[in-house]
Image 1: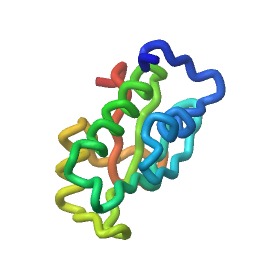
Image 2: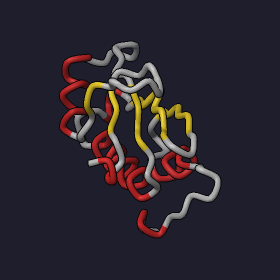
Image 3: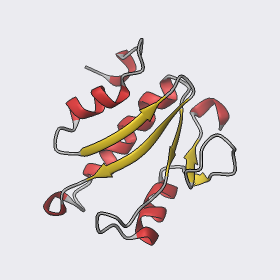
Image 4: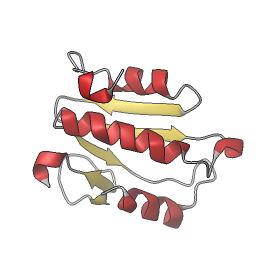
Length: 114
């Protein structure tokens, strides 16, 4: 199945992403305007192999197709390196969140905002 063929009737992005990336620990909130990515955890032995980038690219593709912004806050709770995570997310188009929508640190606006 190609992501361009997915239509989100009930905003079940988390379900879609869990099916495609079963090894990723994930917590998300979804509305009809945005997604909040609360937890994206790659097991230590699976890190630095492109899994997080592949996950995020697919998430971005789905959100762009459905005009949804993505909000998140990089965290060191699971041994994450905040500087490295900020660089990673910025490479994917995330910027400092200056909106009043959520208190998350970063946002990536969907394609029509760009």
